[in-house]
Length: 264
Image (cartoon, rainbow, N blue to C red; front, side):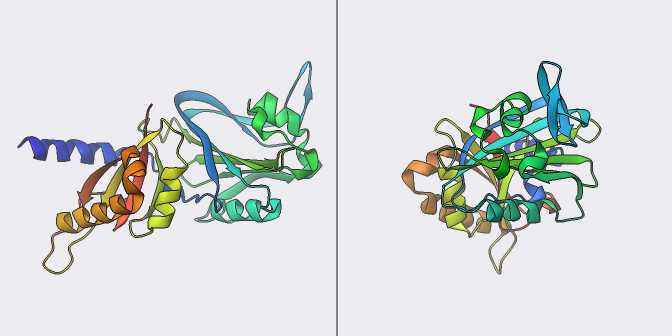
């Protein structure tokens, strides 16, 4: 009875999860997660134009001000990566599933990189040459906004900032699925877990379906065993696995792993 109650609670949780991972932004190859942050009920400005000097500071000429839940992630990519390739990688994903472009700029048409980094995003790690920056703002049909900013630092590393805002009208929870992938894709799962900050832990929801004489729960247990073995002793300590079998939402897919951050 207790176990059944826990399953019901888990399903209630999943029914209200904000599925950031379903929006499908896969990091660029070998990208390292530098930091991430989730804030709820925040007032957020979405830029719709280049940034310019305003009084004693800097701000975009046009913005949308929203109240909602705010997820931000910062990635670092090695200096050998081509900026155009990195931008194309993220842009193609952000424009899938009918998302519309609200604003897009590159190079000096975006304005001052120093202003974007320090005045708007508040992160000096994004500062680079004005001519090497890219900015993209999109929105999906559920009014979920995404903002991409990338630039190459003076040291040569490419920094990628990806923000997502779920407005108050559609948000339901402080939890976000931050990555979702095939349960058999061990290399990709290892990269994701290996790139987590030292003190960051995650919960991994594993979905499965009946196969032959094996129940969905048995298949899920096998998937978890395979993923755990693939992670190795050190990385597996960062992950708590939960076997959903076939009880998860349709949007979770089948034979997939969905990761949710655990607050440090």
